[in-house]
Picture 1 (tube, helix red, strand yellow):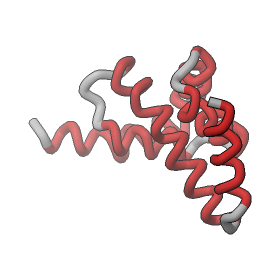
Picture 2 (cartoon, rainbow, N blue to C red; picture 1 turned 180 degrees about the vertical axis):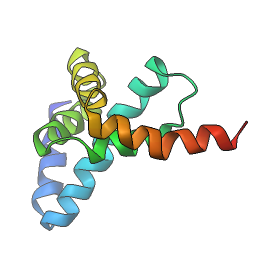
Picture 3 (cartoon, one colour; picture 1 turned 120 degrees about the vertical axis):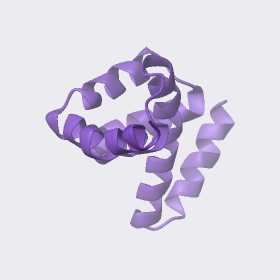
Picture 4 (cartoon, one colour; picture 1 turned 90 degrees about the vertical axis):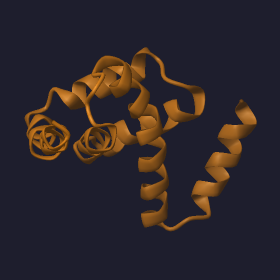
Length: 105
C-alpha cells in the first residue's frame, strides 16, 4: 500500500496546480460516494458528491483524497458529515439534489 502512496505523490508532483486540484477532487469524490450511498440511500450521488466537494476546504479534500487510497475510515465519515452539516452544502443539496429526485417522481 505504501508504494501506491509514493506513486500517487510522484504523479501529483508532475502535474500543474490545476491538474493536482482536479486529481485530488476526483479522489475525494471516490471516498465520499460510498459514505453518501450508505448513509443517505436514494440521494442522487453525483449532485450530492459534487455539493460535498464544492464545500470542502483544501485540507478536507486532501484528507478525503488520501482516504480514497486507503479506503473509507471513521475519519472519512467524520469529514463528510462535517461538510454535509454546513449551510452552504445543505443549500447546494436542496438546489442541485432535490430537482433530480423530484424529476424521477
